[in-house]
Image (cartoon, rainbow, N blue to C red; front, side, top):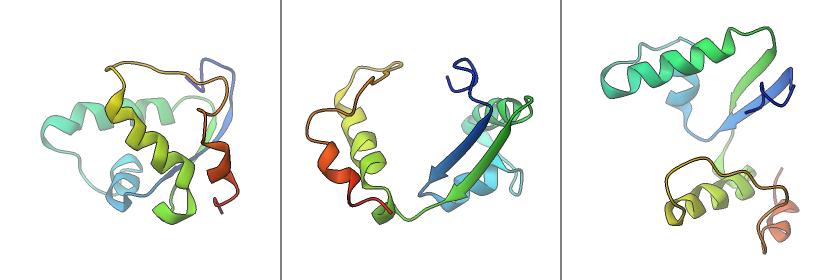
Length: 95
């Protein structure tokens, strides 16, 4: 989505350390996730700057809350023009 919107400098943060290692090629992806990881690595090879970092869950509460909200949404792509109602209060807690 970021690529399609013209973003050419992207910072990706995740609270799962092994995901960073997998995406950056520091660990070998195996099993059912291998094709997914290859797809992500393919996106990283496009002509853009992407930085992938580990961040503690407590430092990114909005992303953590939105990930939890995804459990209640139908499977598929969801784009939010604005933060969901009630989520603005969590922005001040993010570091």
